[in-house]
Length: 284
Ligand SMILES: Nc1ncnc2c1ncn2[C@@H]1O[C@H](COP(=O)(O)OP(=O)(O)OP(=O)(O)O)[C@@H](O)[C@H]1O
Ligand SMILES: [Mg+2]
Figure 1: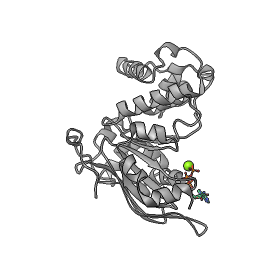
Figure 2: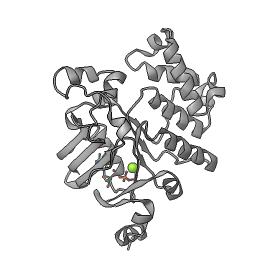
Figure 3: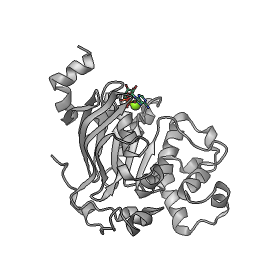
């Protein structure tokens, strides 16, 4: 069954399909990404995805839909295929079979990693990758100008609108007061927030976050929960996390992966009460 629609987010104009001008226009297109065709209320459709590594099946007939504006958590034991799933969505790993669509028309299996990022899918890896010698502001500035070299970006004058957007994001990630600090001096958690900010300046429609609260303090974890809840609806989020307290505080919908397959889906309470899920987690 498809995830339910969020009507007010479905009214955006429909851009050309993945062929011809549409795909080129996807380029560095914040605006093109806004034209993503989500008329059925689904931002991501994965159907019958199979991935094998030298005969080992990392994903088996995986089918998963993410609704527009949804905050979905993916849980499952180590080796379940959670990171592989993100690798498929971002074009890092090609599925052996199956289909992966972003919106109704963008076939992710035919796009490069760069094209996928430019089309509006942002990914945060576990380890923060900020430029430590540059200030917080400069890191955001660089992320905004993905089409320019580092020096060209830093020399270019920002438009008022770009500056406002960075200011807004600094407030969102609670780093306004640290804007001039070198990123290398931030705490681990703050670096994670900066990296989320670096994704947000690119205005992705779908954000993929792999174990975002690993290594965070309780206060940072709590703020991350608030942040993600505030990002949902405007963005769609897919969050992989082992921390069940965190998952419980943010997720309306949880997918449990096990051995490369969807084992259960629904509210956290519902999946936690599922006998098969209990067996997997208790390792019986
Ligand atoms: N490039 C690869 N080559 C071979 N095997 C791989 C490769 N990538 C992943 N695997 C295997 O696929 C399975 C799924 O791995 P994956 O990293 O997706 O799990 P995960 O659910 O993210 O686990 P964790 O919770 O530990 O991060 C594992 O058995 C892993 O060893
Ligand atoms: Mg993983």
